Image (cartoon, rainbow, N blue to C red):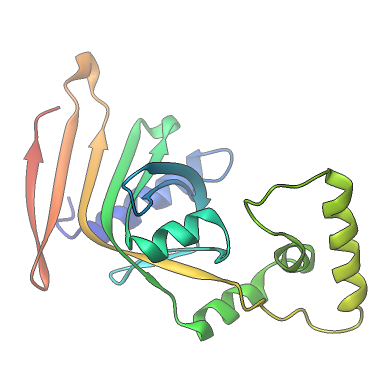
Length: 192
């Protein structure tokens, strides 16, 4: 059994990609504003490794505003088919613009255009307004590469704690906790 949290994450994530019907990379992202009021929503994991867990968003939306004001977050992966979850807590940092550019280039053209058309998390008078804005961006970039909007980028959650939870019969669950210790990790168990 791996004692490195990133190796264990890789093992569990590989199993989830094989067993979950939709969005095995979906994770709940919890943030808090400057007053400590929490907010949670689902985002998609787009990169991971020892440096952290990466997702992308509009930097003018609520989640980015909260992360820029309070750069701490928690993530939760819940893979019901495997009866497992992983909790991650840590500080947050923006990704390098070149990394964001490289990821943006892999998105479908319509997703790229949608990033330009959306005022994420702001009030929208009607669906037609959004579709109209999307069509305007489609015309604007006709015959050209869609570049990454300046307000769209990624965040990396750099973990301090990673907990692996495995469902067991009679609620005798198994919980392994990894806590950052200098350049390495301390590992222990938690009562269910």
